[in-house]
Length: 90
Image 1 (cartoon, rainbow, N blue to C red):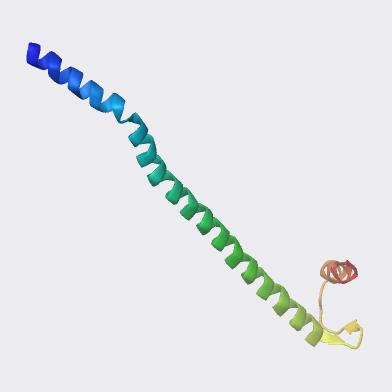
Image 2 (image 1 turned 60 degrees about the vertical axis):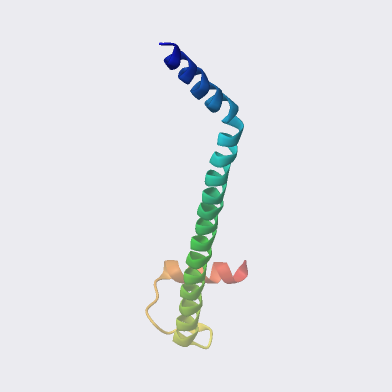
């Protein structure tokens, strides 16, 4: 019984004394993971932005190719035409 009490006291001292070390270990595991996740989110956002930019450039090239002077010669709907001209004015 006395051995169990001594063992329990030793284990308790070991865990209480190492709380500071546990915080550092936890921070060493959590912060790099957090930085990695943020970097992934930023890179995903950049990739999606570049894809949208390509789509917009492709749309603009197709629109310019379909224009005959200042008049759109293909059957582009009125709504899309108004939005495109509105964006040019902005």
